[in-house]
Length: 578
Image (cartoon, rainbow, N blue to C red; front, side):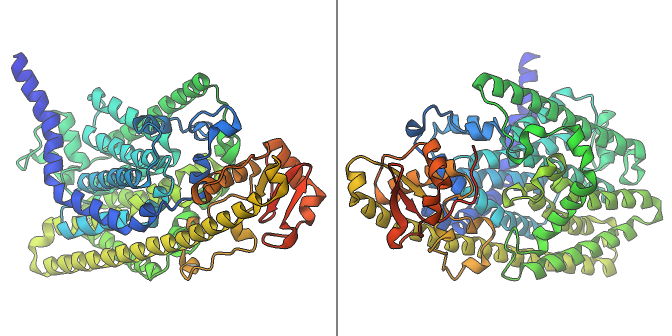
């Protein structure tokens, strides 16, 4: 009996995972390879954003430093695990390969869970995801991009486990889903949107089709009935009931709530163990029921506005290179496919179609649920749009359901379904090409910024080396942001770049981060390390009239000594934090 039990466990555990990888091996390899090629310029040249630059600052010059203490103060304790797994290594190539691999696993797992079996739809949808600016933006956070990608994967896996349960009588699976969701939130809270969108997509499939993941089949599993083509009539797709839907949705909500509670408990434990207090940045320390309920009238509309901005505006993704037209046509095809499926379902399943429509309407809200929980964000950064990207699978899902429809036996209906699937594949492929161009335009703009910053660092290093006060041991302060001064980004790709690609390499809205950034830049590009002033001395200098009256580098009076500190003024620092 013992050997038989072990054999059964192997078949239901490791063998299933092995079978999944075998079945999806080609898709995984192609998706990963496309991601590595598409974002090659980003990681081969180590192009990074200001946060990544700051993360590389030498802690020895600034006193006690806990790795990722800033992120942990934002409730992101999961970052420590990825950091420890790599022993703190931030190699752009290795880190980017791991990040792309994790994203590939996540999107392919979700495609598989939704039952999108058409090869063309699978490849086009997965490539669209990995070629997107969302992935390229994540890559630039070399110190934590693995954690962000792992957060996406864990959120998808948690939703997959929910779909396999269908009844509370499988507690081990539920516990696994709760743990995965809690860890996902611990890496990046915005991945809650990924989980919510994935659950809604699974529900849409269950409501609009009779596939293997239908709610009815899950209910049959709960009753212990075999899931096979010869199910009883009571387990047919047409017997979907409100009770079955309520059970499934209730399980999903329970897992979400339990995951949030576990995440909160682990957050408090991590903060206590590491001696870190919550940051006020982004409203992290003020999240609560009062703030959420009090801002619903503004935060809910903001979630929908942000979703459609992600599709049609140039503010977040850039959305150049014909993407806006792709998004518009995609929405039209999705609407036509949904109406066709509703017609196939007929009046007998009108309630199921109505519930599916409600799920579709809720997708923008679910994708940006973080804006509702933390209303002070107001507007998402590109990094928060994992749920937004997951929602793109709605279109191939609806087309796959049309292909799976039992009415396709009718010759007149078979051809339109095939034509729509071909058109959908072509559209998604065009969208993937548009996103690939967008990602490379972002890389071009960031490359120009890095080249200019490196040249500027070399010039400033020469000026400081020749300065008599510096030679005598005076402290140094390099203040400002090149793009905000006399060194704007002149790349031809700048106008087409996404918002994150225009950040540059230096923050100018926080004097401590500005100092840390220049420390890293001077070491990396000029091979120089100076005796920098303290944070308090910096705050005093940038408030002074002498600093306000200085010209911007490379003017003659852009380098001067203020209170014993040799100051190089590149631009004004717009604000500072005590």
